[in-house]
Length: 162
Image (cartoon, rainbow, N blue to C red; front, side, top):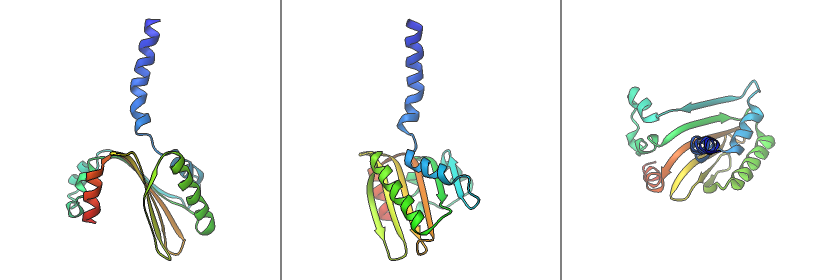
C-alpha cells in the first residue's frame, strides 16, 4: 500500500509540470488536421532561445525581446495549406476552442486584407500565447503558439518597444 502511494505521488510529481505548461488542445487539433497535407508548412522549436540567439549573434535588444526569449520554452508555427472561407471557418473554430480552454483575447487588430488576434492564458503570469494571423486578402492564415511563462510587465515592455 505504501509503495503504491509513493508511485502515485511520483507519477503526479512528474506529470504536473507537463499539465501546467501543456500546449493548447485547439491549436494541436488544427495542426493535426493539416499535418499530412503536401503544402502544409510548420516549424516546431523548443529550448532556450536566448542561448540560441546569442550563439548566432542576433541583435534582439531593439524591442526588448531578450526579456521574452528567456521565457520561451517552445514555439510552434504553422501556415494553413488552405485559404478563403475554409481557413476562416478553421480560425473561427480555433478561436472558440481557445475560449473554452480559458484563453483570453488580448488584442484583435484587423484591416481590410489582414488581421491579427492574440490570445493569452493566465492572469499575472501568462502561461501561453497564441497568435492567429490572416494576411494577403485571406490567402494566408498562420498560427504561432508560444509556450512558457511570461509576466505582464515583460509583455508590456515588449509592447512599448515594438
